[in-house]
Length: 76
Image (cartoon, rainbow, N blue to C red; front, top):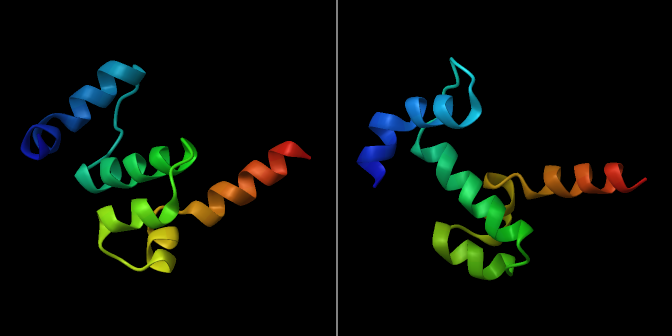
């Protein structure tokens, strides 16, 4: 799957979004998956085990703090 995404991610994104020149790689997909797990309500300690980093590193890697700030700003 990783190799397929690496080879075809640009084409897949162009087909899905109808936009050209979007640069994504498997690293972006990995981060996005972790963000989706977090936003779906999964415990950050469980998500952290997928990334083999500390909780703080996982929060930084997944940009969770930025997500929370954005959610807070949209609520007000």
